[in-house]
Image 1: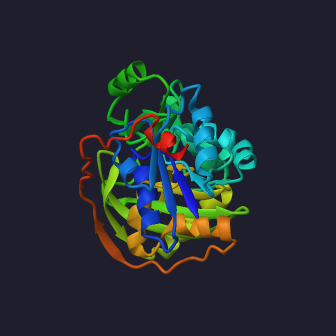
Image 2: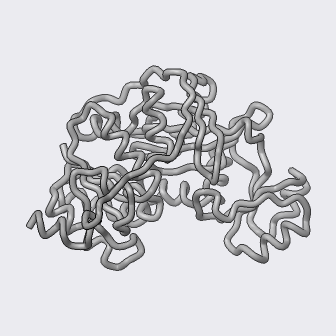
Image 3: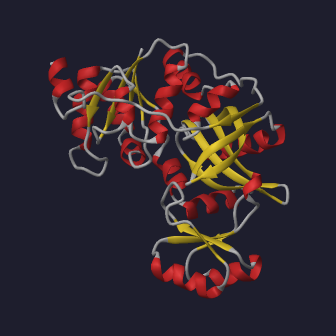
Length: 330
């Protein structure tokens, strides 16, 4: 089978590539990214440059590549591509005869917006983080006190994240950063978790929960255990969300309650890490969608995972160009 993976310069896209390489699938991997300096471009069997997702020519270029390469499945590897690919999923699948691993626009919108995430969880009676928008902060202060969290409604990797400890700091944050959500500070660094789920036909089929340590907004140490109670809580959240395939839930324990502060309607930056605990979600998802195999909950192997830097070395003259690989195919 042939897989087409976008976002080869992102931690997410690279994790998907690594998961496929470590799977039992004999996959030909096509990778794309806007930058020729993206390490993941050099991990695939063929590589192309594409415009940024916001570029009007993005879909046309993507279509040209899908027509040329004829992959079986398309997997987005960046957050910014989710809205446009989700909105065009049916057209892409019917035009090019492929599967696209992406959730509905409704699910993507809930996951992309931290305010909508909190509202969705609250309405479903799940572990939400008390939140408000600017203008309603007094009620949140009265109910939760300080410190509070401020962050962009739409954002990633802790960009724009801040802790405010009094009204003056909160007022400055609101003035300096439009489009924020204000939230209760829940739990602690020692009680932070990340979870992966696979959902099909409205039912969560498999989960994994790992405790994690963060650096620069990314998981750099992960601790996998069975965590039966926490997995059950994530099953309930995944069933309510109704993603198509993968979703990522990030939460903290707050007085024993798993309070979800972020949902990602996609694979996760820790997708490649989870493999070491026996959870290759990319392989499970592909086997289900392409070969009709059921998604079966794997046994989670208790492990401690320590992440580190590595290198991809590209010789002079071997950088991917805008047209070289496509001309070779033609």
